[in-house]
Image 1 (tube, rainbow, N blue to C red):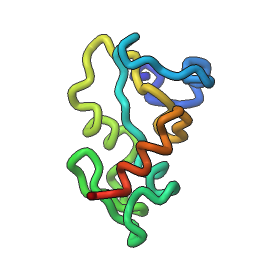
Image 2 (cartoon, rainbow, N blue to C red):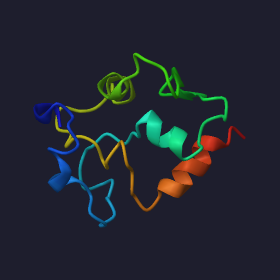
Image 3 (cartoon, rainbow, N blue to C red):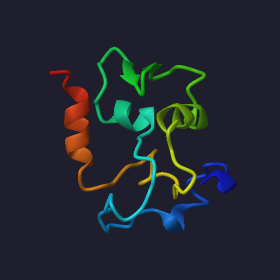
Length: 106
């Protein structure tokens, strides 16, 4: 991903196309961009939330794709294949459960 400047279009052919990702099969960074979480209602309706230890807002400047990815994937290994799924448009089979977990503080 770094060699493509985190351009999703350049990496499209490498993204998951329906086969579930096996977490034991490789090393990747499992994160989701804040816009996907806001669009799916995982954050408060006031347009704010906590992500990777960072306060984020739906219309906040300064938490761009690369900046937020750097924070969320700070411990990513050198052998990482990049993002586990499309961070801007996640489609993994567990994504609905991830949303439910993210939206419920209890």
